[in-house]
Amino acid sequence: MRIVLLGAPGSGKGTQSQRLMQREHIPQISTGDLLRAAVASGSELGRKARQAMEGGRLVADALVLGMIRERLREADARRGFILDGFPRNLAQAQALEALLKTLRQPLDAVVQLEVDYAELVRRISGRRTCADCGRVFNVSTSGAELIGSEPCHSSGAPHRLVQRPDDNEATVAERLRVYEEKTRPLIDFYRTRGLLRVIHAEGSVEEVTERLEQALHAVPRATVAARRAAPTRKRRAPTAKRAAKAGSGGKRSGPRRTSRRGSARRGR
Ligand code: ADP
Image 1 (cartoon, rainbow, N blue to C red):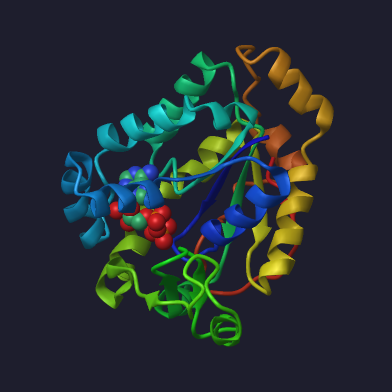
Image 2: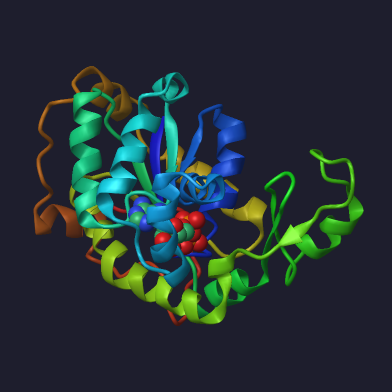
């Protein structure tokens, strides 16, 4: 299964990717994690990426695309992958489409995680990561009890929690603005390709995983098989009439300032 998780910072892409990775036995490919590792290692890529990351802006496409090209060619990605935090603008989405066409590995689905704006801000400001095992907790929610109740599987000692440098208030506002401007257009990009699923991503982590699984299994197996068998075949772009009939109707999705309840639904 080859999927993209779309969603604003704090929408839970990382948490859900990790759970999905364990269930589906396919790697999570997070450009944010890859870039943070590059920064920590002091590589040339890391030095170039650092300033943009600290300011909450996007790292240059050429750097991110080079990194993704390499990662998708690794052996473990042949069985499938979960892309988390990539693509983040139209140029990246187009480059990914071309790359996957060359690799004959088209996407099966793109899932958009919808979360209310105020909830995003709350989640990001409470987010902490264990410096030893990399596990993500939220000190403002149930994660708080978990942190003290079990030792870190990597060090055996209590988790050593750190806050990401870009999780401060000013940078968070900029990251949400960049999401609105650059990443939101991808919702329509993938809707017109018939790949988009939208899920309500508030509630417990388990509830969201359940909705995610439902959304993924709403992809008809026959469609997946047909896409795999004929990856280069052109898909008909949905007309406005067909899209309306299928219920996608150009609805706004992403960080919203009002809350809306709903479960997994097809976005085409
Ligand atoms: P979040 O989704 O919470 O913002 P990420 O870990 O995905 O966090 O990304 C952290 C930072 O890394 C981003 O703010 C950006 O600077 C950089 N980054 C991650 N993915 C990309 C990408 N696909 N293109 C450009 N920059 C990226």
